[in-house]
Image 1 (cartoon, rainbow, N blue to C red):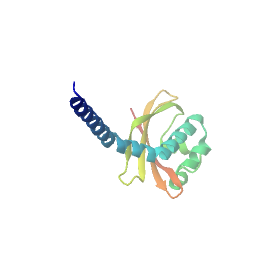
Image 2 (image 1 turned 90 degrees about the horizontal axis):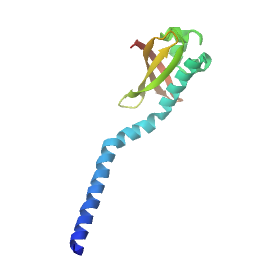
Image 3 (image 1 turned 180 degrees about the horizontal axis):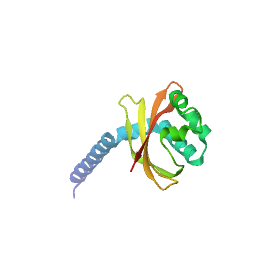
Image 4 (image 1 turned 180 degrees about the vertical axis):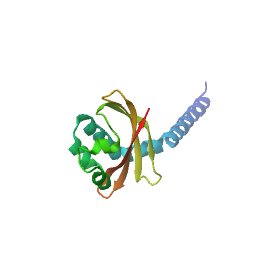
Length: 143
């Protein structure tokens, strides 16, 4: 193979590699950026779920919005107010999250098994405030 053919083939391969990288960046880039931006919200939601599972209701109570605290009345009443009628035995964060277009709200889903062996899905909605993120709503749905 002469030198010109090798140069052309190498140039074509480099161009294909660059185009492939650009295509991957265009396709996966926004999701990666969104995940990085939402990481504090995910951490808060995970900490809230860990608090509920471990029975650290005072800590869980501090992670929810003022409206939820007022409506629940106390840390001990929080799980029942949210509709969690049995202690959480185990949970896993789902792969799907719903993020508002302005990135001010996010809903994170969890699959959970309660102590009475009931399986539920919890939708934990978080809102961004000046101080950071807070949990503004929790919905419990039977599987």
